[in-house]
Amino acid sequence: MSRSLRFAYYPGCSGQGTSIEYDRSTRGICRALGIELVDIPDWSCCGSTPAHTVDHVLSAALSARNILQAESMKDVRGIITPCPSCLTNLKTAARRMRDADFKARVDSLLDAPCRNDLPVMSVLQVIYQELGPEAVKARVTSPLTGLKVAPYYGCIMNRPPEIMDFDDCENPIAMDRLMLAAGAEVMPFPLKVECCGASFGVARNEVVTRLSGKLLDAAACCGASAMVTACPLCQMNLDLRQGQINRANGSRHDLPIFYYTQLIGMALGLNGSDLMLDKLCVDPKTLLRHMRAAQSAAAS
Image (cartoon, rainbow, N blue to C red):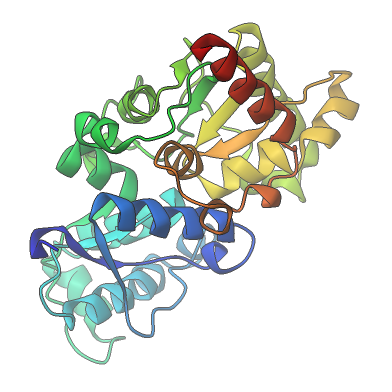
């Protein structure tokens, strides 16, 4: 395997629990695509969503510790993570540490000074930029023909652009093109980067039911039979809370919410243990059965 595709992997806390299917399918497709993921040794929480509201230096130190751990690894091209929240924290810490005074304050909280010279990227960015849709397409064995998807990026995967530095911040296309490569039909979804309500699911549930409801409405209106996302929090709000959204808004949505890694994994022919589709709250079995039936009918 090429060392140029060997990366320090930061799975993030949710990848070990509530979004284990995202972590598992990420590892599966990276293995199939020739991207080597090496877990950062003794990695720890990056601070998630609330740490930066308490103290910017302490928040940066939480992420910088993981960057420091990755710097001890050999022959890695950079740090990658599947989670946009983790990505934001790691990239924001790295950017802030360009300031010498800020970096000195962060380094004082670490076991050793952080070199801060490893690039930080999302897994989506690596697949899209380092391999490309055509390379993914060349490995597809079970195309998702007939599956109509609405790609939903969420509000932080590509923003703010000066920090995330990937794709278009208002109309990203990386996930669209990868879904096309996997054989799916990509619907013209107008709310790609609108907020789903993020972490307000408990504190302000009405915010999530309103904002996520708007996303589900738009996906249904554009003819999508499923949504696809790259964010554990977005996936949770749209999937786990879809029943709450229906009750609050009087809607009747029954849209499966896939991780893009699960759909690419299906197209690559990965098995169920790699995809963990049974973890989805909105059961996709009927949709996928209809898709396969239509494919069989078209082939006969």
